[in-house]
Image (tube, rainbow, N blue to C red; front, top):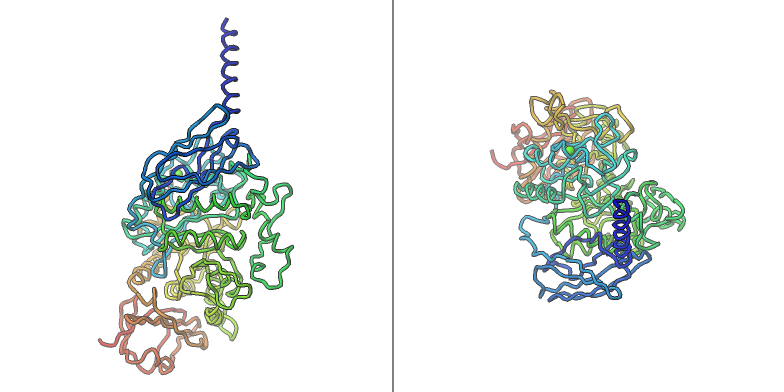
Length: 623
Ligand code: CA
Protein backbone atom coordinates (compact mmCIF):
# COMPACT_ATOMS: atom_id res chain seq x y z
CA UNK A 1 0.00 0.00 0.00
CA UNK A 2 2.72 2.45 1.01
CA UNK A 3 4.68 1.36 -2.01
CA UNK A 4 1.69 2.05 -4.25
CA UNK A 5 1.13 5.46 -2.68
CA UNK A 6 4.77 6.25 -3.22
CA UNK A 7 4.58 5.26 -6.88
CA UNK A 8 1.43 7.32 -7.32
CA UNK A 9 2.99 10.37 -5.67
CA UNK A 10 6.12 9.89 -7.72
CA UNK A 11 4.19 9.83 -10.98
CA UNK A 12 2.20 12.95 -10.04
CA UNK A 13 5.44 14.72 -9.09
CA UNK A 14 7.09 13.70 -12.38
CA UNK A 15 4.14 15.02 -14.33
CA UNK A 16 4.39 18.37 -12.54
CA UNK A 17 8.14 18.52 -13.21
CA UNK A 18 7.55 17.67 -16.84
CA UNK A 19 4.93 20.38 -17.08
CA UNK A 20 7.38 22.88 -15.66
CA UNK A 21 9.99 21.87 -18.18
CA UNK A 22 7.57 22.16 -21.06
CA UNK A 23 6.01 25.41 -20.03
CA UNK A 24 8.97 26.98 -18.29
CA UNK A 25 9.89 28.64 -15.10
CA UNK A 26 12.37 31.42 -14.50
CA UNK A 27 15.34 30.49 -12.36
CA UNK A 28 17.48 33.56 -12.84
CA UNK A 29 16.83 37.18 -13.73
CA UNK A 30 19.80 39.43 -14.59
CA UNK A 31 19.85 42.19 -13.46
CA UNK A 32 17.78 41.23 -10.40
CA UNK A 33 16.21 44.73 -10.35
CA UNK A 34 16.61 48.17 -11.89
CA UNK A 35 15.80 51.77 -11.11
CA UNK A 36 13.59 54.60 -12.30
CA UNK A 37 15.26 57.75 -13.66
CA UNK A 38 18.47 56.00 -14.62
CA UNK A 39 20.86 57.91 -16.88
CA UNK A 40 20.25 55.26 -19.56
CA UNK A 41 16.71 54.61 -20.74
CA UNK A 42 16.97 51.01 -21.82
CA UNK A 43 17.70 47.87 -19.84
CA UNK A 44 18.37 44.37 -21.14
CA UNK A 45 16.97 41.66 -18.88
CA UNK A 46 18.26 38.13 -19.27
CA UNK A 47 15.66 35.56 -18.20
CA UNK A 48 16.88 32.03 -17.68
CA UNK A 49 14.88 28.87 -17.08
CA UNK A 50 13.80 25.68 -18.87
CA UNK A 51 12.24 26.54 -22.24
CA UNK A 52 11.76 30.16 -21.28
CA UNK A 53 12.89 31.17 -24.76
CA UNK A 54 9.75 29.56 -26.21
CA UNK A 55 7.60 32.16 -24.45
CA UNK A 56 6.45 35.59 -25.55
CA UNK A 57 6.89 38.43 -23.08
CA UNK A 58 4.36 41.19 -22.45
CA UNK A 59 4.68 44.18 -20.21
CA UNK A 60 1.96 46.53 -19.08
CA UNK A 61 3.33 49.15 -16.72
CA UNK A 62 3.04 52.94 -16.85
CA UNK A 63 6.10 54.55 -18.44
CA UNK A 64 7.66 51.20 -19.39
CA UNK A 65 7.75 49.86 -22.93
CA UNK A 66 8.86 46.48 -24.13
CA UNK A 67 11.30 47.36 -26.91
CA UNK A 68 12.24 43.90 -28.12
CA UNK A 69 12.57 40.31 -27.02
CA UNK A 70 15.12 37.91 -28.38
CA UNK A 71 15.22 34.12 -28.19
CA UNK A 72 18.60 32.52 -28.82
CA UNK A 73 20.25 29.18 -29.68
CA UNK A 74 19.51 27.76 -26.25
CA UNK A 75 15.73 27.57 -25.63
CA UNK A 76 16.37 28.37 -21.98
CA UNK A 77 17.05 32.10 -22.39
CA UNK A 78 14.91 35.07 -23.27
CA UNK A 79 16.45 38.54 -23.59
CA UNK A 80 13.90 41.23 -22.92
CA UNK A 81 14.66 44.92 -23.53
CA UNK A 82 12.63 47.47 -21.62
CA UNK A 83 12.56 51.19 -22.13
CA UNK A 84 12.04 52.83 -18.78
CA UNK A 85 10.97 56.43 -19.24
CA UNK A 86 11.00 59.20 -16.65
CA UNK A 87 7.21 58.81 -16.49
CA UNK A 88 7.66 55.48 -14.69
CA UNK A 89 7.64 55.19 -10.93
CA UNK A 90 9.05 52.65 -8.51
CA UNK A 91 7.12 49.41 -8.18
CA UNK A 92 6.92 45.86 -9.47
CA UNK A 93 6.82 45.40 -13.23
CA UNK A 94 5.00 42.18 -14.06
CA UNK A 95 6.71 40.59 -17.07
CA UNK A 96 4.10 38.14 -18.42
CA UNK A 97 5.52 35.19 -20.32
CA UNK A 98 3.08 33.14 -22.30
CA UNK A 99 3.24 30.01 -24.35
CA UNK A 100 0.13 28.44 -25.79
CA UNK A 101 -2.46 28.63 -23.02
CA UNK A 102 -0.04 28.96 -20.08
CA UNK A 103 1.32 32.15 -18.58
CA UNK A 104 3.88 32.81 -15.93
CA UNK A 105 4.88 36.13 -14.47
CA UNK A 106 8.24 37.49 -13.44
CA UNK A 107 8.04 40.31 -10.91
CA UNK A 108 10.77 42.72 -11.89
CA UNK A 109 11.37 45.42 -9.34
CA UNK A 110 11.90 49.03 -10.29
CA UNK A 111 13.48 50.87 -7.37
CA UNK A 112 13.77 54.55 -6.67
CA UNK A 113 17.37 55.74 -7.05
CA UNK A 114 19.24 56.60 -3.89
CA UNK A 115 20.65 60.06 -3.35
CA UNK A 116 23.91 60.19 -5.32
CA UNK A 117 25.77 62.47 -2.88
CA UNK A 118 29.20 60.97 -2.14
CA UNK A 119 28.57 58.16 -4.60
CA UNK A 120 30.37 57.42 -7.88
CA UNK A 121 32.92 60.16 -7.22
CA UNK A 122 35.74 59.01 -9.46
CA UNK A 123 39.38 59.13 -8.39
CA UNK A 124 42.29 61.29 -9.47
CA UNK A 125 45.79 62.44 -8.61
CA UNK A 126 44.62 63.79 -5.26
CA UNK A 127 44.10 60.18 -4.18
CA UNK A 128 46.38 57.43 -3.00
CA UNK A 129 44.98 54.01 -3.93
CA UNK A 130 45.51 50.99 -1.72
CA UNK A 131 45.42 47.77 -3.75
CA UNK A 132 44.55 44.66 -1.80
CA UNK A 133 43.55 41.07 -2.37
CA UNK A 134 40.55 40.64 -0.04
CA UNK A 135 41.42 36.97 0.53
CA UNK A 136 44.84 37.97 1.86
CA UNK A 137 44.18 41.15 3.86
CA UNK A 138 42.19 40.18 6.96
CA UNK A 139 39.71 37.50 7.96
CA UNK A 140 36.94 39.43 9.68
CA UNK A 141 34.43 36.59 9.57
CA UNK A 142 35.75 33.02 9.98
CA UNK A 143 32.16 31.74 9.57
CA UNK A 144 32.33 32.33 5.81
CA UNK A 145 35.63 30.48 5.33
CA UNK A 146 33.61 27.44 4.31
CA UNK A 147 30.32 27.82 2.48
CA UNK A 148 28.15 24.79 2.02
CA UNK A 149 27.86 23.95 -1.67
CA UNK A 150 30.82 26.05 -2.83
CA UNK A 151 33.75 24.24 -4.36
CA UNK A 152 36.61 25.62 -2.25
CA UNK A 153 37.05 26.35 1.43
CA UNK A 154 39.82 28.29 3.14
CA UNK A 155 42.99 26.29 3.73
CA UNK A 156 45.62 28.10 5.75
CA UNK A 157 48.15 25.33 5.17
CA UNK A 158 48.35 25.97 1.42
CA UNK A 159 49.35 29.45 0.16
CA UNK A 160 47.93 28.66 -3.30
CA UNK A 161 44.43 28.24 -1.85
CA UNK A 162 41.98 30.60 -0.20
CA UNK A 163 43.06 31.99 3.14
CA UNK A 164 39.64 33.22 4.36
CA UNK A 165 40.08 36.99 4.14
CA UNK A 166 36.86 38.88 3.45
CA UNK A 167 35.00 42.19 3.29
CA UNK A 168 34.36 42.13 7.05
CA UNK A 169 38.13 42.13 7.48
CA UNK A 170 38.39 45.28 5.39
CA UNK A 171 35.53 47.02 7.19
CA UNK A 172 37.25 46.32 10.51
CA UNK A 173 40.42 47.99 9.24
CA UNK A 174 39.04 51.11 7.59
CA UNK A 175 40.52 53.13 10.49
CA UNK A 176 43.87 51.59 9.75
CA UNK A 177 43.71 52.46 6.04
CA UNK A 178 42.48 55.97 6.78
CA UNK A 179 45.33 56.50 9.23
CA UNK A 180 47.82 55.24 6.64
CA UNK A 181 46.66 58.09 4.41
CA UNK A 182 44.93 55.89 1.83
CA UNK A 183 42.02 57.69 0.17
CA UNK A 184 40.85 54.91 -2.16
CA UNK A 185 40.77 51.11 -2.00
CA UNK A 186 41.00 48.88 -5.03
CA UNK A 187 40.00 45.28 -4.29
CA UNK A 188 40.94 42.52 -6.68
CA UNK A 189 37.55 41.17 -7.85
CA UNK A 190 35.00 40.34 -5.19
CA UNK A 191 32.41 38.75 -7.47
CA UNK A 192 31.70 35.04 -7.19
CA UNK A 193 34.51 32.72 -8.31
CA UNK A 194 33.08 29.30 -7.46
CA UNK A 195 35.94 27.49 -9.13
CA UNK A 196 37.61 24.17 -8.37
CA UNK A 197 40.08 24.38 -5.47
CA UNK A 198 43.09 23.32 -7.54
CA UNK A 199 42.67 26.35 -9.78
CA UNK A 200 43.31 28.86 -6.98
CA UNK A 201 40.60 31.42 -7.80
CA UNK A 202 41.15 33.45 -4.62
CA UNK A 203 42.39 36.19 -6.98
CA UNK A 204 38.85 36.68 -8.26
CA UNK A 205 39.50 36.88 -12.01
CA UNK A 206 37.45 33.77 -12.90
CA UNK A 207 33.86 34.94 -12.43
CA UNK A 208 31.09 32.39 -12.09
CA UNK A 209 28.26 34.90 -11.55
CA UNK A 210 28.60 38.55 -12.50
CA UNK A 211 25.81 39.69 -10.16
CA UNK A 212 26.94 38.17 -6.88
CA UNK A 213 29.63 39.00 -4.38
CA UNK A 214 31.41 35.76 -3.54
CA UNK A 215 29.84 34.50 -0.32
CA UNK A 216 33.29 33.72 1.06
CA UNK A 217 33.88 37.49 0.97
CA UNK A 218 30.40 38.47 2.16
CA UNK A 219 27.25 39.55 0.39
CA UNK A 220 26.18 42.22 -2.07
CA UNK A 221 24.68 44.14 0.86
CA UNK A 222 27.94 43.93 2.80
CA UNK A 223 29.87 45.25 -0.17
CA UNK A 224 27.52 48.19 -0.44
CA UNK A 225 27.75 48.84 3.31
CA UNK A 226 31.54 48.80 3.12
CA UNK A 227 31.46 51.38 0.32
CA UNK A 228 29.03 53.55 2.31
CA UNK A 229 31.33 53.33 5.35
CA UNK A 230 34.33 54.29 3.22
CA UNK A 231 32.43 57.24 1.78
CA UNK A 232 31.47 58.44 5.24
CA UNK A 233 35.12 58.91 6.05
CA UNK A 234 35.99 60.45 2.70
CA UNK A 235 37.51 57.33 1.18
CA UNK A 236 36.67 55.85 -2.20
CA UNK A 237 36.36 52.33 -3.56
CA UNK A 238 37.41 51.00 -6.97
CA UNK A 239 35.82 47.87 -8.38
CA UNK A 240 37.89 45.39 -10.37
CA UNK A 241 36.05 44.03 -13.44
CA UNK A 242 36.89 41.62 -16.24
CA UNK A 243 35.13 41.65 -19.58
CA UNK A 244 37.73 39.59 -21.40
CA UNK A 245 36.89 36.27 -19.80
CA UNK A 246 34.92 34.36 -17.18
CA UNK A 247 35.67 31.24 -15.15
CA UNK A 248 34.98 27.84 -16.68
CA UNK A 249 32.55 27.12 -13.83
CA UNK A 250 30.39 30.12 -14.77
CA UNK A 251 26.79 28.93 -15.00
CA UNK A 252 26.61 30.09 -18.65
CA UNK A 253 29.15 27.37 -19.53
CA UNK A 254 26.63 24.62 -18.76
CA UNK A 255 24.15 26.06 -21.26
CA UNK A 256 25.58 28.77 -23.51
CA UNK A 257 22.98 31.28 -24.70
CA UNK A 258 24.43 31.41 -28.22
CA UNK A 259 27.03 29.30 -29.97
CA UNK A 260 29.25 32.38 -30.37
CA UNK A 261 29.08 33.53 -26.71
CA UNK A 262 32.62 32.20 -26.14
CA UNK A 263 35.51 32.19 -28.62
CA UNK A 264 36.95 28.86 -29.70
CA UNK A 265 34.53 26.79 -27.68
CA UNK A 266 35.20 23.66 -29.75
CA UNK A 267 38.96 23.78 -29.90
CA UNK A 268 41.09 25.40 -27.23
CA UNK A 269 43.26 28.30 -28.34
CA UNK A 270 45.40 30.22 -25.89
CA UNK A 271 46.18 33.92 -26.18
CA UNK A 272 49.75 34.92 -26.98
CA UNK A 273 49.71 37.57 -24.19
CA UNK A 274 51.27 39.99 -26.71
CA UNK A 275 49.29 43.16 -26.06
CA UNK A 276 51.61 45.25 -28.24
CA UNK A 277 49.98 43.69 -31.33
CA UNK A 278 46.96 45.99 -31.23
CA UNK A 279 48.92 49.22 -31.73
CA UNK A 280 51.55 47.62 -33.96
CA UNK A 281 51.14 48.89 -37.58
CA UNK A 282 52.75 45.69 -38.92
CA UNK A 283 50.84 43.09 -36.92
CA UNK A 284 49.44 40.01 -38.66
CA UNK A 285 45.84 38.81 -38.49
CA UNK A 286 47.15 35.52 -37.12
CA UNK A 287 48.72 37.22 -34.11
CA UNK A 288 45.78 39.58 -33.56
CA UNK A 289 43.24 36.74 -33.55
CA UNK A 290 45.35 34.77 -31.12
CA UNK A 291 45.63 37.74 -28.79
CA UNK A 292 41.98 38.77 -28.83
CA UNK A 293 40.17 35.44 -29.34
CA UNK A 294 42.55 33.14 -27.44
CA UNK A 295 41.75 32.12 -23.88
CA UNK A 296 43.79 33.61 -21.07
CA UNK A 297 44.23 30.16 -19.50
CA UNK A 298 42.25 26.90 -19.96
CA UNK A 299 40.07 27.77 -16.92
CA UNK A 300 39.10 31.16 -18.36
CA UNK A 301 36.82 30.99 -21.43
CA UNK A 302 37.25 34.04 -23.68
CA UNK A 303 34.12 36.14 -24.07
CA UNK A 304 33.12 37.20 -27.59
CA UNK A 305 32.47 40.95 -27.56
CA UNK A 306 31.13 40.73 -31.13
CA UNK A 307 27.96 39.19 -29.70
CA UNK A 308 25.67 42.18 -29.00
CA UNK A 309 23.50 40.31 -26.48
CA UNK A 310 26.64 39.62 -24.45
CA UNK A 311 27.99 43.18 -24.66
CA UNK A 312 24.59 44.58 -23.66
CA UNK A 313 24.64 42.18 -20.72
CA UNK A 314 28.12 43.36 -19.69
CA UNK A 315 27.20 47.04 -20.00
CA UNK A 316 24.02 46.61 -17.95
CA UNK A 317 25.98 44.61 -15.37
CA UNK A 318 28.48 47.46 -15.06
CA UNK A 319 25.78 50.12 -14.67
CA UNK A 320 23.98 47.93 -12.15
CA UNK A 321 27.05 47.66 -9.89
CA UNK A 322 27.82 51.37 -10.16
CA UNK A 323 24.28 52.32 -9.27
CA UNK A 324 23.73 49.64 -6.64
CA UNK A 325 26.99 49.94 -4.74
CA UNK A 326 27.87 53.62 -5.19
CA UNK A 327 31.41 52.53 -6.12
CA UNK A 328 33.67 55.36 -7.34
CA UNK A 329 35.65 53.81 -10.13
CA UNK A 330 36.51 50.68 -12.06
CA UNK A 331 39.80 49.00 -12.74
CA UNK A 332 39.24 46.94 -15.89
CA UNK A 333 41.38 43.84 -16.10
CA UNK A 334 43.30 42.63 -19.21
CA UNK A 335 42.40 45.75 -21.15
CA UNK A 336 44.40 44.84 -24.26
CA UNK A 337 42.70 41.46 -24.79
CA UNK A 338 39.01 42.07 -25.54
CA UNK A 339 37.63 43.66 -28.69
CA UNK A 340 38.87 47.26 -28.55
CA UNK A 341 35.81 48.78 -30.28
CA UNK A 342 33.59 47.29 -27.61
CA UNK A 343 35.85 48.55 -24.81
CA UNK A 344 35.62 52.12 -26.13
CA UNK A 345 31.84 51.82 -26.40
CA UNK A 346 31.63 50.47 -22.85
CA UNK A 347 33.73 53.34 -21.46
CA UNK A 348 31.64 55.89 -23.31
CA UNK A 349 28.33 54.53 -22.00
CA UNK A 350 29.62 54.40 -18.41
CA UNK A 351 31.17 57.87 -18.39
CA UNK A 352 28.20 59.45 -20.12
CA UNK A 353 25.90 57.97 -17.49
CA UNK A 354 28.24 58.80 -14.57
CA UNK A 355 30.37 61.80 -15.60
CA UNK A 356 32.35 62.03 -12.31
CA UNK A 357 33.28 58.37 -12.43
CA UNK A 358 36.73 57.16 -13.45
CA UNK A 359 38.00 54.02 -15.15
CA UNK A 360 41.55 52.71 -15.26
CA UNK A 361 42.44 49.98 -17.73
CA UNK A 362 45.11 47.42 -17.02
CA UNK A 363 47.36 48.22 -19.98
CA UNK A 364 50.33 46.01 -19.37
CA UNK A 365 52.75 47.55 -21.87
CA UNK A 366 56.49 47.40 -22.16
CA UNK A 367 56.98 51.06 -23.08
CA UNK A 368 55.20 54.41 -23.19
CA UNK A 369 54.06 54.35 -26.86
CA UNK A 370 52.41 50.96 -26.30
CA UNK A 371 50.71 52.17 -23.11
CA UNK A 372 49.67 55.59 -24.45
CA UNK A 373 47.74 53.96 -27.30
CA UNK A 374 45.13 52.93 -24.74
CA UNK A 375 44.47 56.34 -23.26
CA UNK A 376 41.74 58.43 -24.85
CA UNK A 377 42.13 60.80 -27.73
CA UNK A 378 45.81 60.37 -28.46
CA UNK A 379 46.77 62.97 -31.01
CA UNK A 380 48.37 61.79 -34.22
CA UNK A 381 47.78 58.16 -33.49
CA UNK A 382 48.48 55.70 -36.30
CA UNK A 383 45.14 53.97 -36.71
CA UNK A 384 42.83 56.68 -35.38
CA UNK A 385 41.57 54.57 -32.45
CA UNK A 386 40.10 56.57 -29.59
CA UNK A 387 39.80 54.31 -26.58
CA UNK A 388 37.78 56.92 -24.59
CA UNK A 389 39.60 55.48 -21.57
CA UNK A 390 40.72 58.13 -19.04
CA UNK A 391 43.31 56.19 -17.04
CA UNK A 392 45.78 53.43 -17.72
CA UNK A 393 48.03 51.49 -15.36
CA UNK A 394 51.45 52.98 -16.05
CA UNK A 395 53.73 49.94 -16.24
CA UNK A 396 56.53 51.84 -18.02
CA UNK A 397 56.69 54.21 -15.03
CA UNK A 398 56.92 51.25 -12.70
CA UNK A 399 59.68 49.51 -14.66
CA UNK A 400 61.75 52.70 -14.94
CA UNK A 401 61.49 53.67 -11.27
CA UNK A 402 62.16 50.16 -9.97
CA UNK A 403 65.33 50.00 -12.08
CA UNK A 404 66.20 53.63 -11.53
CA UNK A 405 66.55 53.13 -7.81
CA UNK A 406 68.91 50.17 -8.07
CA UNK A 407 70.99 50.48 -11.20
CA UNK A 408 74.29 52.30 -11.24
CA UNK A 409 73.97 55.69 -12.88
CA UNK A 410 75.07 55.96 -16.50
CA UNK A 411 73.91 57.80 -19.59
CA UNK A 412 71.35 55.05 -20.17
CA UNK A 413 70.74 53.45 -16.80
CA UNK A 414 69.64 54.25 -13.28
CA UNK A 415 67.94 57.64 -12.93
CA UNK A 416 68.30 58.26 -16.66
CA UNK A 417 65.68 55.58 -17.32
CA UNK A 418 63.18 57.59 -15.29
CA UNK A 419 64.18 60.80 -17.03
CA UNK A 420 63.78 59.34 -20.53
CA UNK A 421 60.52 57.60 -19.60
CA UNK A 422 58.97 60.87 -18.39
CA UNK A 423 60.29 62.64 -21.49
CA UNK A 424 57.89 60.51 -23.53
CA UNK A 425 54.83 61.83 -21.69
CA UNK A 426 53.91 63.92 -24.74
CA UNK A 427 52.56 60.66 -26.17
CA UNK A 428 49.86 60.47 -23.50
CA UNK A 429 46.57 62.31 -23.78
CA UNK A 430 46.99 63.11 -20.07
CA UNK A 431 49.73 61.44 -18.04
CA UNK A 432 48.31 63.03 -14.87
CA UNK A 433 45.56 60.43 -15.10
CA UNK A 434 47.93 57.47 -15.24
CA UNK A 435 47.84 55.17 -12.23
CA UNK A 436 51.45 54.80 -11.08
CA UNK A 437 52.73 52.05 -8.81
CA UNK A 438 55.86 50.26 -7.64
CA UNK A 439 54.29 46.82 -7.43
CA UNK A 440 51.00 44.97 -7.65
CA UNK A 441 49.55 41.48 -7.29
CA UNK A 442 51.11 40.34 -10.60
CA UNK A 443 54.65 41.65 -10.06
CA UNK A 444 57.48 40.96 -7.66
CA UNK A 445 57.38 43.25 -4.62
CA UNK A 446 59.39 46.44 -4.96
CA UNK A 447 61.43 45.81 -1.79
CA UNK A 448 62.55 42.51 -3.28
CA UNK A 449 63.27 44.21 -6.62
CA UNK A 450 65.58 46.76 -4.99
CA UNK A 451 67.44 43.88 -3.29
CA UNK A 452 66.02 44.74 0.13
CA UNK A 453 67.83 48.03 0.17
CA UNK A 454 65.88 50.27 2.57
CA UNK A 455 67.24 53.51 1.13
CA UNK A 456 66.32 52.52 -2.42
CA UNK A 457 62.88 51.44 -1.22
CA UNK A 458 62.24 54.82 0.43
CA UNK A 459 63.47 56.72 -2.61
CA UNK A 460 61.06 54.72 -4.78
CA UNK A 461 58.20 55.51 -2.38
CA UNK A 462 59.12 59.19 -2.48
CA UNK A 463 58.94 59.24 -6.28
CA UNK A 464 55.64 57.36 -6.20
CA UNK A 465 54.06 60.01 -3.98
CA UNK A 466 55.47 63.08 -5.71
CA UNK A 467 55.54 62.37 -9.45
CA UNK A 468 52.72 62.96 -11.93
CA UNK A 469 49.83 60.50 -11.85
CA UNK A 470 47.60 58.69 -9.37
CA UNK A 471 49.73 56.71 -6.91
CA UNK A 472 48.78 53.15 -5.95
CA UNK A 473 50.33 51.19 -3.07
CA UNK A 474 50.14 47.41 -2.93
CA UNK A 475 49.10 45.97 0.45
CA UNK A 476 52.11 44.86 2.48
CA UNK A 477 54.39 47.37 0.77
CA UNK A 478 53.68 49.74 3.68
CA UNK A 479 55.62 47.21 5.81
CA UNK A 480 58.36 46.82 3.20
CA UNK A 481 57.36 43.20 2.67
CA UNK A 482 59.68 41.16 0.51
CA UNK A 483 58.89 37.72 -0.83
CA UNK A 484 58.02 34.63 1.09
CA UNK A 485 59.43 31.38 -0.14
CA UNK A 486 56.20 29.46 -0.56
CA UNK A 487 54.16 28.03 -3.42
CA UNK A 488 54.63 29.60 -6.83
CA UNK A 489 55.76 33.07 -7.85
CA UNK A 490 52.36 34.63 -7.23
CA UNK A 491 52.21 33.29 -3.73
CA UNK A 492 55.60 34.79 -2.90
CA UNK A 493 54.07 38.28 -3.03
CA UNK A 494 50.46 37.57 -2.07
CA UNK A 495 51.03 36.76 1.59
CA UNK A 496 48.43 37.29 4.30
CA UNK A 497 48.91 40.19 6.69
CA UNK A 498 49.87 39.00 10.20
CA UNK A 499 47.17 40.16 12.58
CA UNK A 500 44.40 39.70 10.06
CA UNK A 501 43.79 36.15 11.38
CA UNK A 502 42.91 35.39 14.99
CA UNK A 503 45.60 32.75 15.36
CA UNK A 504 48.38 35.07 14.18
CA UNK A 505 51.07 35.64 16.76
CA UNK A 506 51.47 39.35 16.02
CA UNK A 507 49.58 42.14 14.28
CA UNK A 508 51.08 44.47 11.71
CA UNK A 509 48.01 46.65 12.19
CA UNK A 510 49.45 47.95 15.46
CA UNK A 511 52.70 49.77 16.13
CA UNK A 512 53.61 47.23 18.80
CA UNK A 513 53.02 44.29 16.48
CA UNK A 514 55.26 45.65 13.73
CA UNK A 515 59.00 45.10 13.65
CA UNK A 516 61.31 48.09 13.82
CA UNK A 517 61.92 48.11 10.07
CA UNK A 518 58.20 47.67 9.36
CA UNK A 519 57.44 50.68 11.55
CA UNK A 520 60.18 52.62 9.79
CA UNK A 521 58.60 51.96 6.37
CA UNK A 522 55.06 52.42 7.66
CA UNK A 523 55.82 55.76 9.33
CA UNK A 524 57.68 57.04 6.30
CA UNK A 525 54.77 56.24 3.98
CA UNK A 526 52.16 57.54 6.40
CA UNK A 527 54.03 60.80 6.81
CA UNK A 528 54.23 61.35 3.06
CA UNK A 529 50.67 60.27 2.25
CA UNK A 530 49.17 62.46 4.95
CA UNK A 531 51.25 65.45 3.81
CA UNK A 532 50.21 64.65 0.25
CA UNK A 533 46.51 64.90 1.12
CA UNK A 534 46.82 68.70 1.24
CA UNK A 535 49.76 69.08 -1.16
CA UNK A 536 47.91 70.52 -4.12
CA UNK A 537 51.08 70.68 -6.22
CA UNK A 538 51.17 66.86 -6.22
CA UNK A 539 47.49 66.72 -7.26
CA UNK A 540 47.40 69.36 -9.94
CA UNK A 541 50.82 70.91 -10.30
CA UNK A 542 52.81 70.78 -13.49
CA UNK A 543 56.10 68.95 -13.45
CA UNK A 544 59.55 70.26 -14.33
CA UNK A 545 62.71 68.21 -14.14
CA UNK A 546 66.39 68.74 -14.85
CA UNK A 547 68.77 66.37 -16.60
CA UNK A 548 70.10 63.93 -13.97
CA UNK A 549 73.80 64.35 -13.24
CA UNK A 550 76.14 61.94 -11.57
CA UNK A 551 73.45 59.97 -9.72
CA UNK A 552 71.37 63.01 -8.78
CA UNK A 553 67.97 64.10 -10.05
CA UNK A 554 66.01 67.26 -9.22
CA UNK A 555 62.39 67.88 -10.11
CA UNK A 556 59.61 70.22 -9.11
CA UNK A 557 55.83 70.13 -8.91
CA UNK A 558 54.51 73.60 -9.57
CA UNK A 559 51.08 74.97 -8.73
CA UNK A 560 50.12 78.59 -8.17
CA UNK A 561 49.48 77.83 -4.49
CA UNK A 562 52.45 75.59 -3.85
CA UNK A 563 55.83 74.59 -5.25
CA UNK A 564 57.38 71.29 -4.24
CA UNK A 565 61.03 70.36 -4.82
CA UNK A 566 62.28 66.77 -4.83
CA UNK A 567 66.00 66.08 -4.49
CA UNK A 568 67.15 62.57 -5.36
CA UNK A 569 70.66 61.20 -4.88
CA UNK A 570 71.15 57.51 -5.71
CA UNK A 571 74.95 57.68 -5.50
CA UNK A 572 77.11 56.54 -2.62
CA UNK A 573 78.37 60.04 -1.82
CA UNK A 574 76.85 63.29 -0.68
CA UNK A 575 76.52 65.68 -3.62
CA UNK A 576 76.55 69.46 -3.69
CA UNK A 577 74.66 71.00 -6.61
CA UNK A 578 74.95 74.55 -7.94
CA UNK A 579 71.51 76.04 -7.26
CA UNK A 580 71.74 78.54 -10.13
CA UNK A 581 70.79 75.68 -12.45
CA UNK A 582 67.30 75.69 -10.88
CA UNK A 583 66.81 79.48 -10.72
CA UNK A 584 63.85 79.42 -13.13
CA UNK A 585 61.87 77.64 -10.41
CA UNK A 586 63.66 78.66 -7.21
CA UNK A 587 63.32 82.34 -8.23
CA UNK A 588 62.36 84.40 -5.22
CA UNK A 589 61.87 81.51 -2.82
CA UNK A 590 64.03 82.01 0.25
CA UNK A 591 63.51 78.85 2.28
CA UNK A 592 62.55 75.23 1.84
CA UNK A 593 60.79 73.04 4.41
CA UNK A 594 61.41 69.31 4.47
CA UNK A 595 57.97 67.68 4.59
CA UNK A 596 59.24 64.60 6.44
CA UNK A 597 61.33 66.24 9.16
CA UNK A 598 59.62 69.65 9.16
CA UNK A 599 63.04 71.32 9.28
CA UNK A 600 63.67 74.36 7.09
CA UNK A 601 66.75 75.45 5.22
CA UNK A 602 67.70 78.78 3.68
CA UNK A 603 68.03 78.53 -0.06
CA UNK A 604 71.50 79.61 -1.03
CA UNK A 605 74.02 79.10 -3.80
CA UNK A 606 74.09 75.33 -3.42
CA UNK A 607 71.85 72.39 -2.61
CA UNK A 608 73.31 69.55 -0.57
CA UNK A 609 71.97 66.07 -1.34
CA UNK A 610 72.84 63.34 1.17
CA UNK A 611 73.76 59.95 -0.28
CA UNK A 612 70.94 57.48 -1.07
CA UNK A 613 68.10 59.79 -0.23
CA UNK A 614 65.12 61.41 -1.88
CA UNK A 615 63.83 64.39 0.05
CA UNK A 616 60.71 66.47 -0.49
CA UNK A 617 60.62 70.21 0.15
CA UNK A 618 57.95 72.86 0.10
CA UNK A 619 59.39 76.16 -1.10
CA UNK A 620 58.55 79.36 0.80
CA UNK A 621 59.25 82.99 0.08
CA UNK A 622 59.27 84.14 3.68
CA UNK A 623 60.52 82.81 6.97
CA1 CA B 1 36.36 34.68 6.24
